[in-house]
Length: 416
Figure 1 (cartoon, rainbow, N blue to C red):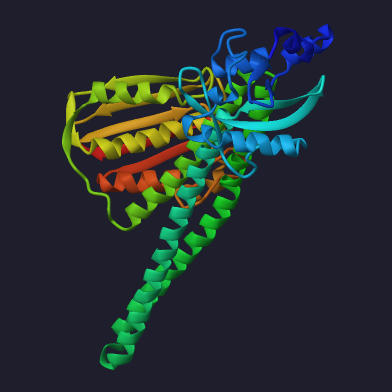
Figure 2: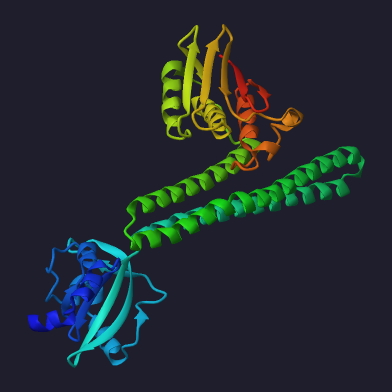
């Protein structure tokens, strides 16, 4: 096709400005599939220099496996050239100049110019949306797996209860013993039922919020991408990541509690170097702190190493430091103090946060308990329950003091 016809396709100066300023990639082809003109967005999207695509066949933008049958689709569109979306209900892919494939959405339109048929493709790169959808899918799958495991556990406990009742019927002479076993089984069943009920309640709230945030961010990312607002895309991508991490944290809390209650956590004692151990923890936690928060460490050690389970101790400190950060405002300090005696290791974590109401402190280590002043802060109410169980595994004790509105101090004492 002659250059004069190509210029006739977009001959008006004002129209050319609009054509080049569109946020979608636009490709205009003739009925043979030859590219007549593309806008700047399309050239950048596919990795070509200015005017490099002009005159090439459209199939250069398709993955090789789709090229053979594409002419049939092109002719079908020519015969019925109504505006439409391509591949509705299917994933479409395009290929860059360097051979890289990426997901796209394509809308088709048509026009006539001097008796010649023109097809116009509007192309959007949806890579960001696909990545966000995949992250959301993984979070949902984790929730389904955990709910399935919880249901199996309920079924197993119910079967145990039935076996106990059958034993009671057979062993009349041991009625008192059997009745006690039934009572204990019923208590376990009741606790498990409450756990399931509370899990559903927590999940309906704690999962809905981050999932809604993910869906909202995905929608906004598409809008910002069309406008080329990369800083806003990055902001909402971080929101998606934070929401997925929050969902993962919730699932980890439930799985950790399940393992502790079933006695599946083994304690492995090994020597650890205090200075290195605390430096590593502080370094890892810094990235999770709120803006301006800092951890101040003070060590007063009579010995450089002790034998304990480093993995369990690390989980204890991560949980307590995370709480200190979560329940404190920006620019607040967190104090991590540690000292040893001949027989004890004593670690305290002090914050300048919101504190715990006096009348509610007695419930602090109960499962799913959340104080009345933390309703707007995300959490499951399991963290301190898990910490207490971990401390008990190390034959230690966990104590705290708190003043409402001024902060809290948690003290872990374990034998060294």
